[in-house]
Length: 215
Image (cartoon, rainbow, N blue to C red; front, side, top):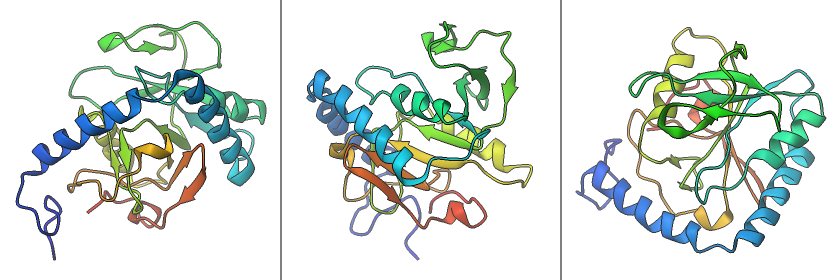
């Protein structure tokens, strides 16, 4: 078996290969026209709702966009309109799992750790049934390349620790963020599905059967 930290035909360290791919994908994403990117976010939201919107009452954790990330708010608004409850992640410490606070799309946010907007501290902490994950890249096996901080890896590991059902992991991205192979290690989690302006792709991943990290 090929070690999880290596890809066939490569002896470059995992961290270095991820860093190089991040640089490429950041440039690719920044090159997109902002007006087109807004239209793409709407299209991705429509694709999710048409394909498999979760039932009313489902707690869906999303994000607010940072930099050139695709905007998840059209999707969160559409799911909220169908009766879902929305939450946003909150960084509580640099090396700790995140928590999720309830939020209503459009409500004011306050600055959190790292300057990322978060719901007010008075909002309740919830456990999401779905998590809409931001990403830099994804491949056809559901592997996800994030920013490199490890926040979602730590958070998903903490959610898995009690042994209960794991949230459905939906990546949200532009189609140009797809790559042939995302380098992955034993701590990386695969997506259950990814939505882009071109539609929704559902993966048969290890996370659906026991919610195990990618390998």
